[in-house]
Image (cartoon, rainbow, N blue to C red; front, side):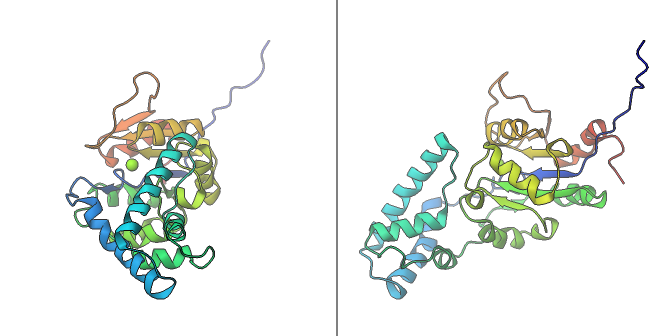
Length: 263
Ligand SMILES: [Mg+2]
């Protein structure tokens, strides 16, 4: 006879992690031509190096070498999940054009680059309310992004969007961790940052492979944020635990998964 009393185990929700681009930040209104826009950033780096560190050949060479190395870095990332790093690419570009190794500091290059809010980008209108609802119930929130900028650089941008104060503790960039989503290392870095377990944590993002398959493989429940540029699902291979058109649909889903999570 089985005398074991069935224990009702209530799962606890401790954290919700968000992808950044096209999940919190809406890029659909950005209409500028990217390389023309980024040329201003690269010109500042070129000028800084050429005037303050070491002479360089033409700016055109610098830009071409930068894009060749950027493409190479992202292509390597697609097969290895090793994250490219903007600062490293800038330093290696300069060194390939004659700057002696060790002379150039990547932080100084990135300060010259001078990232910020991109014209036409905005936070989705459902972001403040949904974050406030989570935070008011004691749920920790974090950002996990496949950016090739270190997080301190994207912090400048998200502060300008008014997002930074929502995420005081956990903002993780692939460039800092060294691995891109869907690699488990970057998800674990976020869990470690907040001191939470995968089963206490929900991930939400717009990319089926990086966000959904990656989070699930790391043991998190994964919610697909459906936006205009959401890539197509790999039918039957990647199945999100839930899908939403608005972040305001998240709390009722959490009610099902973590009854009583609202304080
Ligand atoms: Mg995204």
